[in-house]
Length: 154
Image 1 (cartoon, one colour):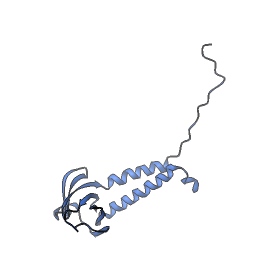
Image 2: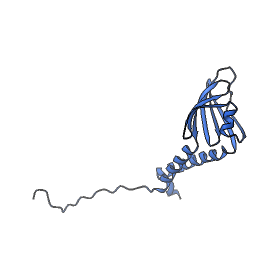
Image 3: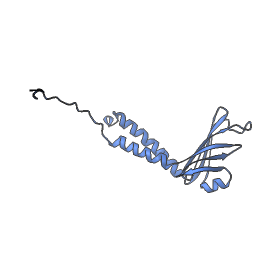
């Protein structure tokens, strides 16, 4: 079993497989729950929302003092689809193409967010891990020269 993990391709394949599984778990969870996470970074906070098969992420700035959480925060609520989230006034989508989008999220002050569908993260990672794990490492074959070949110009 140890020999299986000696090559860098196998190690990278396992890492991408784990990332793909985490992404798929988030995708499945987003169909049952709405998760909101905020991580303070200086005078702003990285805010991520997972709902309805989408990953919405943006950086909120501190417009009013004390409006951002002083420590990392995570809230989870029962299922909320994108239409309900927009109806609550929490999100306004400016442009959306094939699930990808740009918009504004409203907390204490509006801030720009990027909307990324989970499938666009999970599928490429799954394909990459499959290729890295199932393709064998190829050994280079040195070209052999034939010493018995006739010399040029004879």
